[in-house]
Image (spheres, protein in one colour):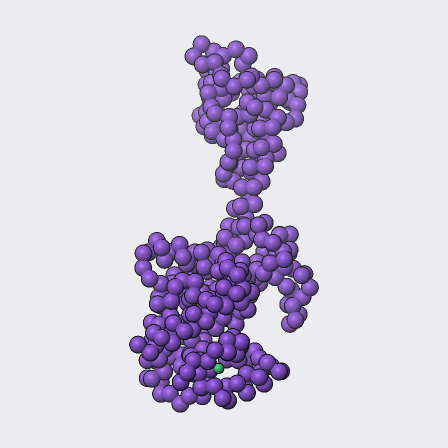
Length: 206
Length: 183
Ligand SMILES: [Zn+2]
């Protein structure tokens, strides 16, 4: 059996085997097959290959779709977190990083109050009759044990850290406040990637 | 191309737009629509027991970078490109020759040829062995043309070549499989 050189006919064999050929193309191929043993043999090969390759493995599409959903929601949260972090960094080069808030949370927890506010873009809470709000400003000069920060000092009007404490300002001892401020000074303020899991802490007042 | 497909189902592009708008159900429909063919392809490319893992990874990656997906191109060629790259990476990592998986040994030749079941199974197993000897590109082209009925144009997009080169790959693959079967 000599090899057929009519590639334009061979090109159509997979379509014929799938029943996807009609009209003049089908008629022409059938005419050719009637006289070409080589193409008839190749058609059998293509059909056999379709059988081998055509079986569909069983896959759990619901599980795959759920994985896609999980992945996309994590990505959306991360996108939101990064966008929010960048907004915060834009208004203050001294904005505390997530480590600040972790440290702040642990320090404040140690003195029995809850931290529910973070650095914000709004004006400091006005001093007034509400006794549960304390404003903590960055010290203008570092304490004796605090190294000089290498970054430029943030303007007072923007680089302000606020602690809103349900237990009142008197519940936070001076020593604890100083510890917190030292932490705030020492940490790296870079904030490029922020895990979504920290959002509840970071965005408590947003 | 946001118009419905012929059978009245929303097009891939319409579903992608819905998914981008927050409709999670649209992703489910797209997975249900394309996962069977992707899984056949992954199995054909030699994945043994981890077909579903690769298919899932394909969809997660595809949806994770939908912003880079061009509306004018076909979602399925894009999915198959990702699946192919994953299969190649895994084959490289495993440092083994890919193997065509026997999905269901009870599948028999569907032609009118009166082969017995035993002969059919023997033919299939020889055919699998022959396809395993093809290059990765030849096998991908052969699979997409024979099993999925794709055009050379679409196949070229998946294997990153020209339409003419895809056609040459296909005819080379057929010739080689015949030669291997004749040995
Ligand atoms: Zn011929």
